[in-house]
Amino acid sequence: MTRGAQRRVGLAYRGPVRRAPAAVVAILALATACGSAPASSDGPKVFASSSGVSSTGTDQVPNGHNLVACPLGDELTVVLVVPDRFDAIHPTGRGCLIGSSRSFETVGVQASDRTLAEEKQDNLDPFEDQGGDDSVSDISYRNDVDAFGGKRGERLEYECFCDGQELHMVRLQAAGIVLSSEVSQLDPAAADPLPLARSTLGVERGRFVLIGDVDHGLRYPFEDWMDSLDASPAGFTAYPRDQRGEQWIIASFDEEGLARLRDDLARDPTVSELELEDVPDAVGGDAGARLSYRQRVDRFDGEHVDRHVVLGGHGLRVDLLNDDDPTERKSLRDGLEVW
Image 1 (cartoon, rainbow, N blue to C red):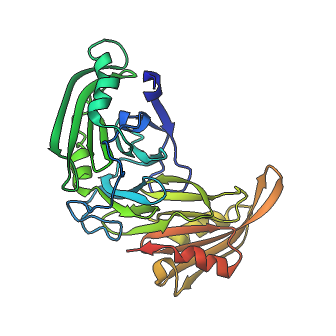
Image 2: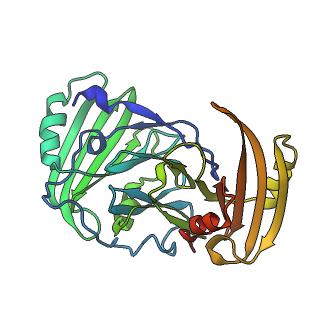
Image 3: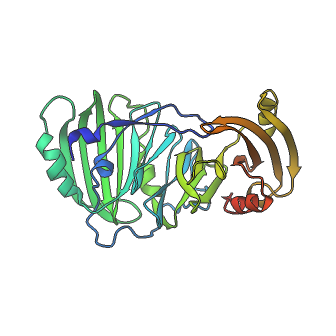
């Protein structure tokens, strides 16, 4: 792997979210781009966070923070808490990179098969104090440290002058997982996200997406019909395998309610059959609102009419696209778990 492979990449979230993120500039950390992780023949295992945080509730999430999920593959998902200034999630295949569109800082989670000692030797030591871009300095490595989830592991810490930014980098590895953070040395006012990420990180069985804060949250399984996800700590969009729009689901926090959305759509000439009603069974099976409408859209193969059903409740909003069949709508909705 070349040093150039660790350059920043732009991240964007395309779905409707509470804080619409711009392009996120982040560093592909060693733990992500190089595949660094503790040596483990069996890979990551399920374990609880040391603070009791899980995907089934948000009692332990402090104000100004979000609960996020990071799938490690098809069978396991990491759950942890990050500050709400982190507004985009970039999947990496065996983990994810959680970034902020307003600063040079990221939190990363990755599963792989190398020790941090090996990564230090191969990818840091040859470039220490070389000067110029991508130069690293003040490299510190320790073994048998308190990592996360009550696990002992490795800690690798160093400074990096990367793409003109002075960044402080930390990697922790234990139980087949690397937790990483990059924060700017030029922004001392920003709270370090690593301590809370360490105390709240846990591994759960299954592959799912998650949004949650101190007040409410939503969890949805990654199902066979899904091809990909756009996600942020404030919402996600699941895309269908055939990309023709038969099944799309978009979940987000809803601060203004469906009445405001109805009023906005009423001014759109492409929208018809607009109807807002109270229903006894909305998000999470509780009473809420249901907004339905049709919308003309132009696609590569001509004009289409999309059917939208939007469910609101629990301070959350779930958009189901092309959801004409009530049976299908029920099956999509049944996957939702809310609190």
